[in-house]
Image 1 (cartoon, rainbow, N blue to C red):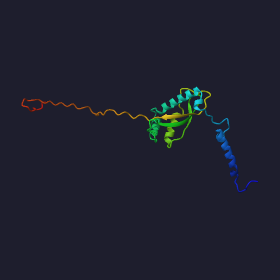
Image 2 (cartoon, rainbow, N blue to C red):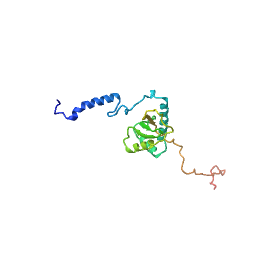
Image 3 (spheres, rainbow, N blue to C red):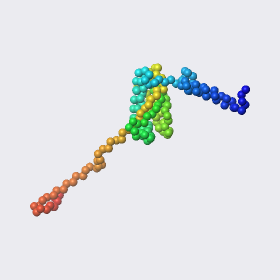
Image 4 (cartoon, rainbow, N blue to C red):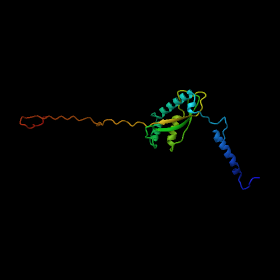
Length: 186
């Protein structure tokens, strides 16, 4: 018989722990069936078509993040303020992309930023982005990429120039033969 002092919810915890541990060992999230379980392929084991498509997506995403779009400029400014952003290798964003059969990014997932605006800007830049090609039919999604955003180069300093034209000065000095300078002629 069960101990009446133990609540029914507490009696179920060991079973839940066992199920959660088994799910974790199998790589499943609790409540998912095998058909819904996320699958992954190591990069070295992925078909070449998947690798080529990942490169295509990475290039398109990097170009979008480096564009002059106001959301991209704001996001770049935010990223440049993060600790370590001044490193030459930039900031790495881990982003998962869901791409539909037409090559449109429909959803992204990533570790969120501390502020709302850069999160909104990243989603605005990525979700709905039409890629030049659709993913291979058998490609596993989401496509997880590490996107490197390098700091924009500061404009190179130009030689200082006065904002006004150089004044032209004309002075004429004549020698009067006595060893001293004569008067200025105008």
